Amino acid sequence: MFVSDPSSIAPISDPYDTCVIGSGPAGMTLAIKLAQTGQRIALIEAGSLEYDDWSQSQYQGRVVGDRYYDLDNARLRMLGGSSNHWAGHCIPLEAEDFLPRPHHPDTGWPIRIDDVAPYLDEACDILEVPNDFSDTHYTDTIRKTRFQWSPPVLFNEKYHADIAQSSNLTTYLGSALVGVDHDGRRITSARLQRRGGEGFTLPARTFVICTGGIENSRLLLWINAQNNNALIANHDLIGRCWTEHPHAQLGEVLFEDLPDGFFHNDEATFSLSRAQQDDSGIFNAALQVEKYSYSRTKKLVADIACVAPALGGRLFQAMGKKLVCGARLHGQWEQAPVAQNRVALSPLDRDAYGIPRPQLHWQRSDTDRKTIVETVRVFAQELARTGKGRVRMADWITEDRPLPEDGMMAIWHHMGGTRMHDDPAHGITDADLRVHGLENLYLGGSSVYPTGGYANPTLMIVQLSLRLAAHLTRA
Image (cartoon, rainbow, N blue to C red; front, side, top):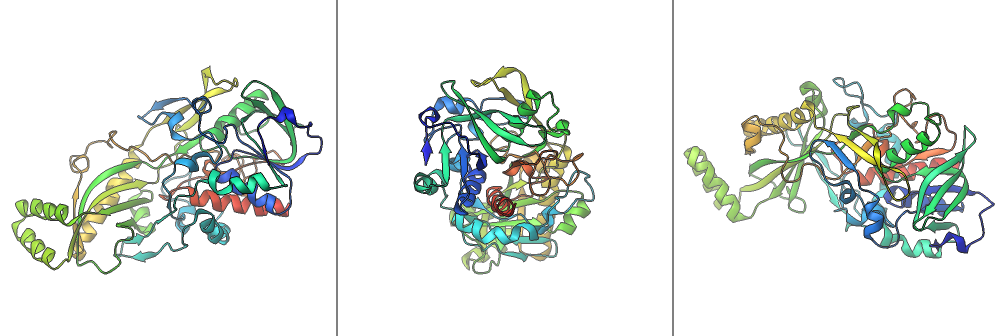
């Protein structure tokens, strides 16, 4: 059932089993799954069924540090959240992504891949992708992996009919979370405000905030500030170690003697082995190649022939036998978690609900540059050593310049800020995504990631929501 005007229904006296704040992939997956078990669920969405400029403008904020996208363009405030503008690229996190890095102290998850693997099949069904993410050794130090593409699934379209017909799930549209009521140990009700200014409260036994990788931190900071920073004891950690997936154009590749099925959807992805990453003191990175046309490959071979005639001549001969293929090389990679990269509350600007707007402090570190440069260097060396191809690196790499700030500098993957950790001194939630110090407040989405690997986060977001649904159902 949808509710657009809460004043038209009687006040809620019987608490919901769970109140889920946010209807993106995290919140929608959780709410639908819990409702299917027969629980009474309230799903809260600050936007409406469709995009509108006024709702979207509430996401405006300021970026401090490196150049980044306007924050109100980076996420969508409407039913289905940011699923409404994602591209559909999916791959799971790797087993090694959950493990601590010997060269960085703020790494390692309190769970392992076995804790989320049971939910992969169902997550793939929800996102409508095959559970076929091959992972093979390409050389001694390079692995070849495979992304899959969702149609993409838009959660508002996929679940609109289910919500409208459900007797267990009530979805409140145009209702923004502005505060909570509590007894010191438990949240007793969510304080919500309509676009026109009317306020109302919803009582529930359990609350889950799933509003995105910036909003989760922002709302938690605001709720804590309303309570003299005493509600969440480790409040200085809220918003810290925010990460993205930096992105850059890395050059071009000529592959030789390609086997059948080398490309999947005209692309292929490579990463370094975990042992090589740790030996190099870097994080995980995906080198993604996009297949060139024959004419563009021919031009790339001609460029090589100008500087290496013998090699160029051999490659031209191989082209005639269709044994050579050119490709564009770009990458997205794991960012080192740094406490100074954080979501904070603006001391001056507030949105229409009186909540301080976010300040995103984000700066790429020397480790971030080292991660991608070292990954490309090893990749190029391995292709040349094994005779599998040649890499022409981008000028900013060969000329030892900083990471480029033109084009696509990152890919709208907001992670961290409310990281999970067994120790309250180092994280906001525990391994079950419950906020430390509170008995019934949980967080969903990629803000709980301690680190992000190189995987696009949506698939893991859905896996974690299914895992949380199982935990809350048992509880």
